[in-house]
Each structure stands twice: as C-alpha cells, then as structure tokens.
Image 1 (spheres, rainbow, N blue to C red):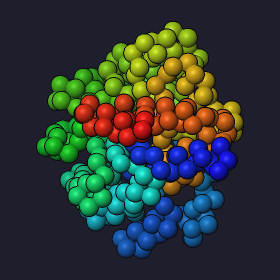
Image 2 (spheres, one colour; image 1 turned 180 degrees about the horizontal axis):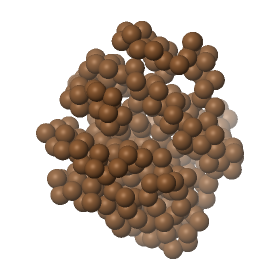
Image 3 (tube, rainbow, N blue to C red; image 1 turned 120 degrees about the vertical axis):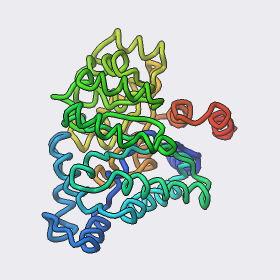
Amino acid sequence: MSENAEIIDFIKKTPKIELHLHIEGTLEPEHMFELAKRNNISIPYKNIEEVKSAYNFQNLDSFLNVYYQGSKVLISEQDFFDLTWAYILKCKKDNIVHTEIFFDPQAHVDRGIDFDIVINGIYKALKKANKELNLTSKIIMCFLRHLDEESGFKILNQALKHKDKIIGVGLDSSELENPPKKFEKLFRKAIEEGFLTVAHAGEEGPPEFIWDSINLLKVKRIDHGIQCLRDEKLVEELIKTQIPLTVCPLSNVKLCVFDRLENHNLKKMLNRGLRVMVNSDDPAYFGGYLNKNLIEIQSALDLTIEEVKTLIINSFKSSFLDEAKKNVWIAKINK
C-alpha cells in the first residue's frame, strides 16, 4: 500500500468527531425536491441540475441566499427527523462516533414553524442514533447574526424548556456587518441559563471578531477562526489557551475565502500549535462530508499521517463529551 493510500485508509477507519455541522446544510438536492413535493412547497428550481448550478457561490452571503431557500421545504417534525437521520447515516459511513450539530431555529420560527417541531424532530433522530447505532451527540442552537439581538432573546426564551436537549448556543450567518459585540447581552443571558457558548468568527471577518467572541461572548470554541494568522498576539493567545478552531476546508474554498485547497492555511495553523480540526460545515452545499474534507485537505497540503491524527484527536479534545469518554476514544486512536 502506498503512503497516500495508507493515510486515506487511516482516515476512513479511524473514529472521528464532527464539531462544525449545520443540520440544515445537510439537505441534499434530491431530499429538497422530495420534501418540496411532500409539503407542496414551491422552490425556484426546476430540477436537481438547476439546484446544483446554484451552488456556485461568490461569498458567504451568496450561499446563505440559497441555504435559506432550501430550508423552506422543512415543515413537519418528520421533515426535521428525516433530515437529521440522513446525516446520521452519513456519519455511520464516515465512522463518526460523536457529532455536535448546529441548528438555526430563527430560520424556521420566522416562517411560522413551531420551535418544538424543529427541536423534537432533530432530537428524536439523534436519540434513535444513540440507541441503534451507538452514535452520541449534542445539539447547539445558533442565533442568526443578521437579525437583531431582540430576535435572539425571543428564541432563547423558547429554548429554555428544552435545556435537556440543547447544550449550547452559537452564532452564525452573515459575519462581516454583524460583529460579536452586537450579541454580548444575549450571550451573557445564555451563560446565566447554563448554556455553553461557541461562535463563528474569523471566517470572512477580521481577527478582532475572534478576540470579541472570546472576551465578550466567553466562547468555548471558535468556529472557523482562519483569519487569526493576521494577528500575531491573537495567535499567541490561542496557542496559550488552546481554544479550539473548527476549520472547514471545502467550505472555505467554495465560499472563496481561499482560491484553492493548496493555498489553505490549515497546515500553518497546525504547525504553530493551534488547536485546529477539520469539519464539513454545510456538506450538501460545499461538496463533501467529513471524510472527504479530511482526504482532500490531506492531499492538497501533503499532511502526514501524524498530522491527520492530531487533527482528529483535537476534535475529541475539543468536544463537549466528558473527559473520561474523550480519553477512551483518544486511547483507541493512539493504539
């Protein structure tokens, strides 16, 4: 077996965790059409080929326009269950043993879908995955940053009775015009209510947004964080604190943050001692689930098997699993 084939085999066979995954972003074109038909929803595409041709994005906002169009086909608890279960089957295929998924309730509640329908559909699928496939999971509710803080407070209040299902809150959507400080009070309240916090920062936005996510939002993880290398003091802080950075390579190329995978800065981040890992973000839109992200970034950056192993172990270290479970999985990987 060649060295490259050996690394690909290692990626496929090794237990993995995913920490940056938007469940609405797993809606495959075929499933979108199926749900549109089921729910008698009109979508602006005549066929699957038209959907796929719409997946040529110029930046984050051009993607979000298509993303929210797709979400409109999700209506019933069964729809959210089916969406989540389809992703779970991808997890099983990719040997993902634990996943911490994001969902965007405002995108659904604002079009008349009850919060309980959304969370219950997702949660029931994850419970079934744990029982039948031994796949563990956590749910993180994201606030849409293009909406105002008041809207976030309304959705937080609806989430309070679901604390048994939702472990944390995050921040996603259009980054550039919506800095973390816009949501400082909202995140303070979420922390008071016992939620863990994460936030998208430094994807397209400046290093300052990463600083503010850490200092104002008190986040446990930074989602993306790839702009951190523009600020040496920030890099030193991230090395010292080992705050995780959930990097999504295929997403970064698809949204034109990098022109090609070969120019991605993941290896530089890894070599500096930053706690980085690989995730798929919105895989139905960006061309691949976790294994494909790992395989393609390994090939593009010529990562060694030890570097790939570090990326995978970093995911376990950075998860919201308890320490004992983390250590069990890490020991298996290090065998």
